[in-house]
Every structure is written in C-alpha cells, then in structure tokens.
Length: 256
Image (cartoon, rainbow, N blue to C red; front, side, top):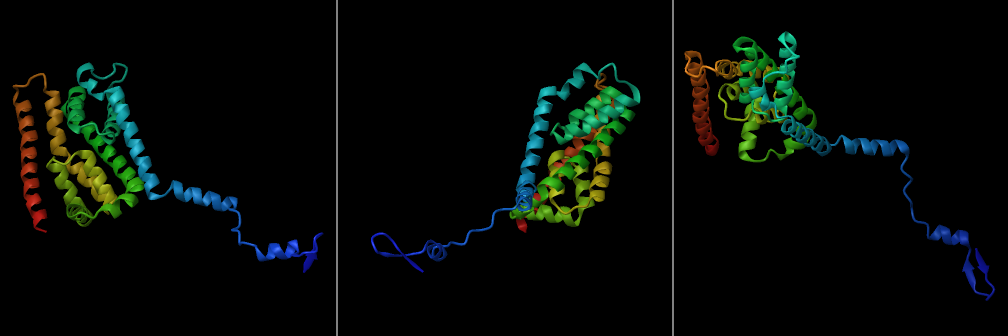
C-alpha cells in the first residue's frame, strides 16, 4: 500500500518497507546456551592444559620459596616425630616430586632423617603417591590436548611403546634412571597406559635406586663404610646401564 506525502509523491508504507528490508536476526542467546558455551570453553582440552601448566608453575614456585633441600642441613622439625613424621614426610615427598624436586635429594633426606629401613618405606610411599598425582593430573588435564601433537617419529615410537607395553616399559624407566621422574610420569599420562601397570611398575622399579639413596643418606656420616660404598656403587651402575641402554635404543629408533 502506498501513502501520499505532502509533496504528492507516493511512498511505500512503513509496514511494507520493513517487510521488504527485513534481515533475519539470530535469536538472542538464552541463559542455558550461554552457560553451556562457557562450560565447553572452560573444559576444553587447551583450557585444561593451561590449568595444568599453571598448577605446575605454582608448585615449582612454592618449592623455590620453601627450599626443601634444607632438610639435609637443618633436619626435621623437632615437634614432629615417629610415625607422624614419616606420614608427613611421605606426603610432602609426593607433592615435591610433582613440583619437579629431584628424587635423589628426597631419597637422601629420607635416609638421613629416618634411617635405612623407615627411610626406604617412606620414600617409596612418597614415590608412588607423587607418581599417581602426576599421572592423574596429566591424564585429566593434558592428555586430550597433547595426544594430537604426537606426530614426530620419536614421539610416536615412545607413545606406542608405553601404550602397548606399559608395565615393562615403565619398569625399565624406573630401574634404569635416565629419564627424569616427572617426565616419565607425564609421558605415561599422555599415552594410553593403564593406572594399575603404571603404579605397580613405579613401585617395583623404584625399590633398588631408592634403597641405595636411602642407605647412602643414612650412612652419609661415614663415607668410608662398606654400606655407603655399596650404596654408591648401586647408584652408579644402574645409571651407567641406563645410559648404554638409551644409546642403543637411540640407534633402533633412527632405523625405523
């Protein structure tokens, strides 16, 4: 319908013009849709990976602040003793391994504070605890984002080895130190290795090396004693064997 204006010119009615120029407008985002979109963004693989990196950075900062290596020089707080001290130390041991504190330092401290037997038990408990926490964090927060990045030949070979032969691969990594403890934990978490093989291999494979360091820490005041010398030999021999094994595996991976 046309309307005549004051000059006599025929123009389209406002309703007709609005109909002709109407552009489809998307419906406004409902509250439920907004919540779902934010939830997907917060729980996306890369958001979870960012959270993991932030947690690890915070843990490393706490380690630098509190300096756990002072246990070797200042000893354990006097108000904690006996079984309670061992439990607290085991929990702290596990958290420190997640925050990249070297296990040899913690094993020496366990032996120096609690002696050979209780130090070994406490250190092993902390080892399994720390490995489990790191594995869980890596599996929950990092696996979905990192698995698509496994494109290199070495990365695919390592992932396949850990996924298909999880127990024996992790047992070898624990028996022959060479790969840092935290790196093995997060590599296993990104692979398809199961929880039980990972924890069993970690507990069994860590016994020899942990025992050697615990004995060395307990006998550090007598560096010429047979027990201390045997412990140091047990530390050096697996390290050398691990180096040789890694060199041989390097040539095998190049040949693939």
